[in-house]
Length: 165
Image 1 (cartoon, helix red, strand yellow):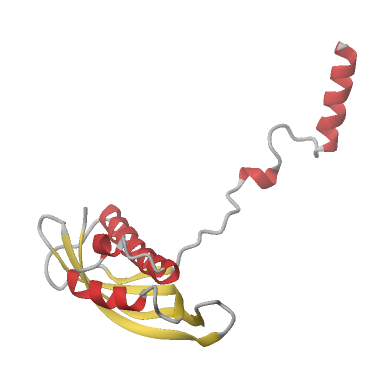
Image 2 (cartoon, rainbow, N blue to C red; image 1 turned 90 degrees about the horizontal axis):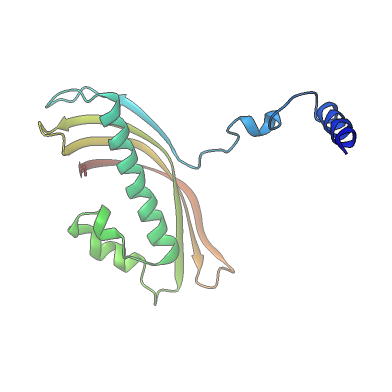
């Protein structure tokens, strides 16, 4: 029995490329991160102080999470999470765009962001920045998804004031 195990292990060793452990393809992270490109054009604010790399990461993650929530609201017509990510002044607009009774469905994905930091509060809880040249792939389809009404890549600029948790 021991002889069979040694022979089978040896054959398996040479059959897998003479390497122990998982195959090389599994040792690397080969998954593509599904996130838009985010570039900091300027991290020195006009008002306040320069954030460290950890705070920049928190700002970027919070901002991309808000975009992800917006894209989710459009796609699913579920507005439950917009109050967590957007100011009250935008709630009505977003609810109208995601109305269940509408004859269309909006799908969008943000493709890239270029952030320019303009202000950071002393307690590091409020940040203001400009997002220039945001590329948004937008598709408006019929409610039954049989017809594409509009499809384009748009470019827009945003002035953002954001709170950090």
